[in-house]
Image (tube, rainbow, N blue to C red; front, side, top):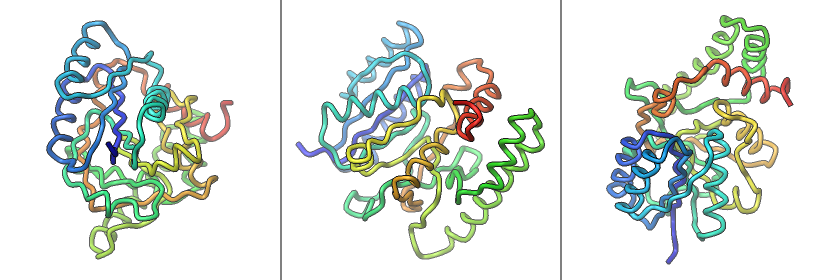
Length: 266
């Protein structure tokens, strides 16, 4: 059987979100698909609950250590490549829901990576993650993290946020459905299979959490691949379900991840 979509869903504790997602996929995806649940192990009790969902909805189950977004998703991608032939690979968080989806015949159309419209519960637009490769913004953020100066981090982020807001304001009013962007938000990404097969794309595992999107954008640029923002696909992101369940030092991971991306940590 030809499989159009393979979903890789990395889960850490947030079982309720996961069940809501797989129910949503049953309602919204008309083509053939498989769901691979990657359980970043927390406890036997949580893993048992995740396995029950996999059994109920006929999902593949894969357990890994909890070593972050990149590590878990890469194990899922590798599992998919060993087991399935597919058209598109979708990496998504468990705390998302598909609002609208287009037919696969109209999906990629020579694009390499698709970034949908992603909005939070508060309506905040999360794509484009970065509209362009803005080196001024990147430098401000780097200086802020390097020297622990929050105003510089916020200044750099503000440049990107203003560009995102302006892009969405104009793009949503135009008739064209797609534009090219530099970086896509990591909560829901659609990959043409050639990206993981021919180019060997994997998420950079030196990012435990945060800024994986920046390294992915750099990879695509270096390989001459395009990231396309498509407003026909719309996603609700309930946001940070796993993070809210876990008491982590978010700033520590943000700082380490960005300094690695910028080249200060190797």
